[in-house]
Length: 527
Image (cartoon, rainbow, N blue to C red):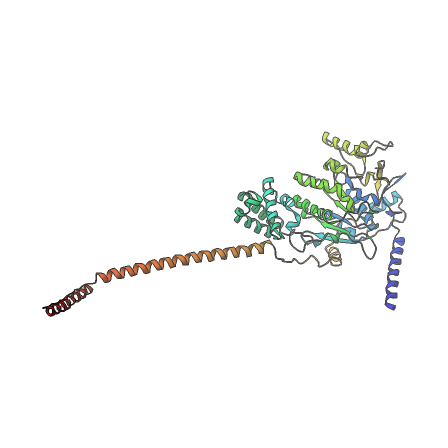
């Protein structure tokens, strides 16, 4: 009985602590179930959590404040208990895990915006890294990545992609897991060696295309290393968590400082994470707040030189994933980097400054201005070109889902640490992570390579047995032929033996004498 009372008391004290913590902290970004993002002298601009899954866009030229806006919004989502996934391309988002420090830029912005009660804070973060150096390893299997994204990573043509799709289908039909690139190479070899038995069910398989794919796999492994693929595969559920201590949404930060050097691999990996959420999360409709918010930095890479099938799939995901409780926020330089089919789905917009020195840039600015609901107090196109660092044009969705009139505001300062962190700080976060030691050690599960080797060994053994049988039959046949030849030769030799002839002659004469004597005696008796 006393144990139950102790547990109940502990839970009550924990709840009380969290409540007091949030009251004392004086959170100024998440107020009255609204997320404060920016202010001007007249208005405060809020993002409604129940509209956060209507997706968003953060655009602007380099150095105009996009990263700070991303960071502020991520912190605010975390404050209201929403998990966040974002990609750290430059290494300057990792500071989110640490308490902010006083600096002139933040202090001046706090004073300008009159943010009474502003306090620095830290956020619960998990560091991830496909290379396993700056965070927990993020890997998946070749099979889970899918042939389209693998094809993009390997820079394959449409014809080669169709052959790769056949290889994937054969592996699936024969229950041969493609865990890593060695499995893929093995499967390519196996299909090439046995292509005749697959032609009827899967169509023609060009050996030349398989050879090209194999060469590209080798080049990819030499260039990027085989860090992406293998087991254990990363579980998307580890992205959707809140902190037990503070109730804040956990912020998962994928370090892409190295990965970003290989744009196709960067896009494919991030798309795989997005696909994992899309394929596995259940339909939930519109919630009070999203299950997770996903920030896609350098979003223009997602659509540049992408196969049409991949772009079409991304458009479909953007349209449908909101009903699964996921909010997508694209970060790029200009809205023109994003296809219109996607832009039309992005309801929450933050536009930082754009510069126009060419007709094409002027056209891009006009397109960006036309994407906002007009504010009669200023010219949107002109305002975009005159925004200062940290200033932005902002329009979020209202309670009824309609876009609000665009406002020119200054974005709030972040509460966590700005800039990069030390190796010691990074190791501390990694070692104290809730997923520490789950993905660090690779596992070596039975997969296509081992299965193909076993099957090929069995086939080779059967072939060798057949060869041995035929060889033995040949030897037996030759031995029987040799025996018959020897017997014939012996008979011929015996027939022509002089002694045999002499014996036969002597035997013949003796026989003749005996017969003559016997006949003579018979004749005498008759007389």
